[in-house]
Image (cartoon, rainbow, N blue to C red; front, side):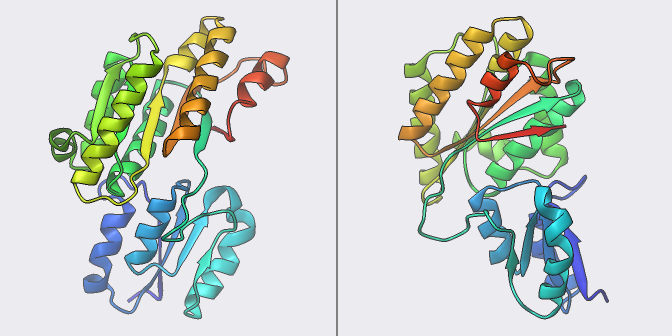
Length: 257
């Protein structure tokens, strides 16, 4: 029997939260430590509520992983600095730009973001190409996410990336998703918002339109509980240009896949 089990949220067959639910029967003496890219407060709370003693955010793994292992083996809780998981406080919104090397990386990034939200009982909306929407649905089901239930409850919306950005329509969708999650029993739902529209605009050279869309999302985030993920194509030879810096400046975090 293991002394400690190290889990990620995004696992190939079952997600890490589902594994944590089963561990008490399989390895009742094992302590659980999560190491994940996911930083949603709801996901961290869910992991800890399932018996995990530790949660390490992957960007901090070099400094946090060994201390976390030592703390958890001592029976102490360890959560990476900067992660919110209190039951009362509502965290600031997350607006992350994710630079993706190819289509597979885009689908993977979107799937991880959406799965974390839905598994925590939060709603999600995505704007993506038709092929990516189909791949997403397949990937999410393969990860054990009950997509049929999410669609039936109205907590998952998949829209065409070609749909013109419209603030009123976006807000209406957010309100509907939040209400659906509340009706399904989620307290204080946070809507996971993701899509390829701004990234596609950037790739087409429409930088001003991409920035205006990102600014619109920031304005919406000031009024509603949302977390936002914006996949962009990996910049080629533009790593330090003013335009790239202006895009990144509209986001709270920058990551690569």
